[in-house]
Image (cartoon, rainbow, N blue to C red):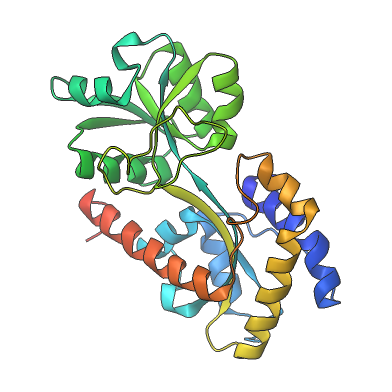
Length: 281
């Protein structure tokens, strides 16, 4: 409880329960990077009354076959948010103060990059970018995002990947500098940070949070839940929450058609990256 997925679900439910005229309870199933939640969901009826919240770590769990669930067991109902990712460096490290400098330096020596976990979002994100941009890197796992940030701020490593919501306070404090946004669109709050697409590298690394039900749930139920969720997430209450993470309330939430397609595409990309890293066969 209390993490980003939990908080987002609680914010979403505030208005959704009104539009569905039904009670909504947030039930935590901790353990295994979503494995327990996935196995629990598989035991529930396909009636739309059990909705699974998921983010990228759940896709990695599926790809690594750490639960009994498969991606085709799910239908995406609604996306709550799509948060892009920065490559950040220590503000005092003038050698890597721009993405051009980082690319040039990487030709001499791999970029020492802090990640939370092997096979996690930062690891896969940096791998994907390195393949596209030809930037050698060496991943150093610190076990948590907080420890990764501490390592970067202290100069133990040279770079890391952070979402804007994670990076904002550190950027404002002058501890880290965002040198690249791994996305196709600029962020209004960070107009001076170039995108990977503007640099000629078509790489998007995002943290999505959304909701899914089991395949076999009647389509009219899926559509009703999707419509209610999207309406709720367009409301000022949720919009304010999104703006706090530098996200656009007009584009972050999406309905079942868009989200289900993206969910399957994100899974395929995650599976390919994990295979490239040698973490799955």
